[in-house]
Image 1 (cartoon, one colour):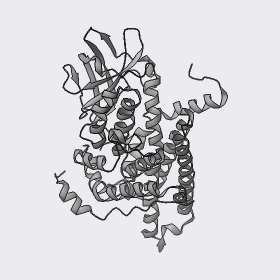
Image 2 (cartoon, helix red, strand yellow):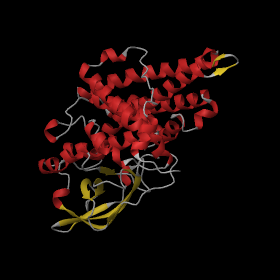
Image 3 (cartoon, helix red, strand yellow):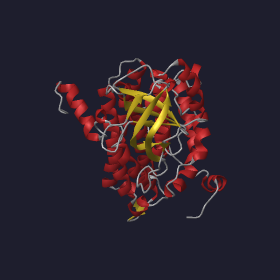
Image 4 (cartoon, one colour):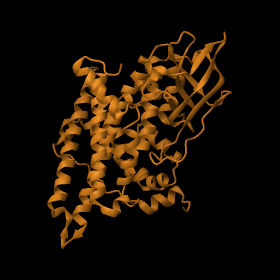
Length: 405
């Protein structure tokens, strides 16, 4: 594929993003003016600076590094964290709306922002020392510094408690050994929030910085999904980690699972954005595509597909709006977040599949975003709690019986 500059891509594709957000039940009326202002500003930035370049980078399987300052300026990194640390100081509904607008364009870009805000900045804010907060959060908020989250291991995905990555106390430092896999942002991250077991077998969080001897981040290649997102491994071979880099505020699985709740909340909004984009694309196409002498929008089976899509989108919109209220009130439970993540990713996958069929052969080309959304969502349905794991979380919550054991 011919190499193009950012300027060439922006010029060639400017104005091609004609996305109009569906809102069948007037959910906009439930939002504050500030929430809508932030959402609209992110939507405008996506249309201007992200949509014109995303297909090119996805086809080349490369992360568009040049967008990082724009993501920071748009408030996509830790918008729900306090302004005193250089963050947005916004509510959780606004955070969700930002994630929705990013994933409306591409799940990989939303993943980059989710990891930065919910899995790197959030644990530093929630469990870090004041010195750690002041050192890292302002730079992470602007994108001057980028981070990743090390929990999943090659042999321990849905069972994070089985991790083997470990560290030992060597007096004036910790010695870290092990490996993490499927880590978004790893290839270019400046820091990694890593979860490992100490000598007592207790899980703790460590901030590992790029450049520490024995720390490497090999990139994962040949992905069919999240191609515009950088994925890699974290490898620790006798890495000396300063003691001041230990997160002092938590021990046990509560630490990483609390972070995942924040990220899963963002995913529930983000997947909705992907579903909305697929629906909007299919709706516009159906009005323009002529077969048998009329637009395919006039045929019953096509209307059935569109009617079912907008119904599921509307239900998902109300689900995350209410969940945002619960998050802001501090009342949202992990099980409620699991339900929203599972439901909204599932409906996005189904809507993507139906929308692709409506576009026929054109649906598999890069002229339209649907196939890219479908491939991306195959990762989203698995990461940060698989579809089946979230089902069992809901099952345990309603029955009181643990089906995991």
